[in-house]
Image 1 (cartoon, rainbow, N blue to C red):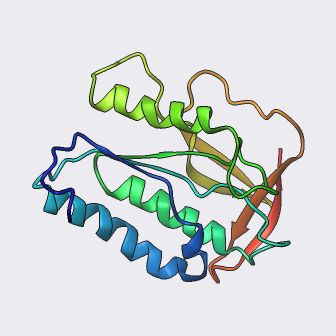
Image 2: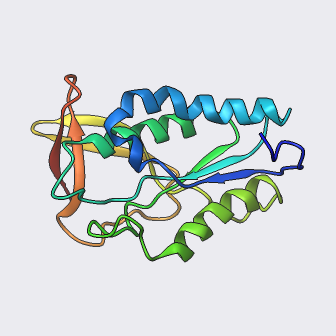
Length: 176
């Protein structure tokens, strides 16, 4: 509240790990916070960019809780206009809750601002996003949006994937 008298052009947000035990609540609270900020600043289109919860093992695992927070963040980015989520799955460190590669995080956030606030048309601001998953036997074939050029895996198999069925329980998966 004390800073509401200041002008604001946009916001960036880096938070979420403390919400991993309340991911269902975060699904409502996070977009409500964004909407509240926009309302309080009388700026319904206030750009709001945020950082995906970085990979971290939390003492050996968290039973899919961080995946649920990431899903809540992704839903906010899809459902609220003027938002963007900087992905960190590829630049984090599962043994360090605060990834040291802050430059890449900042660059990814800046790409949204360059596109939205400064009108840059040659900036790629979003990475690949799964459009749909098509079952093929015991596999899922993923189709992506926002692929610029060719999408290639840097290794095979690719770790750090999880899938959830209709029961919402996440399990490790192998991607190639």
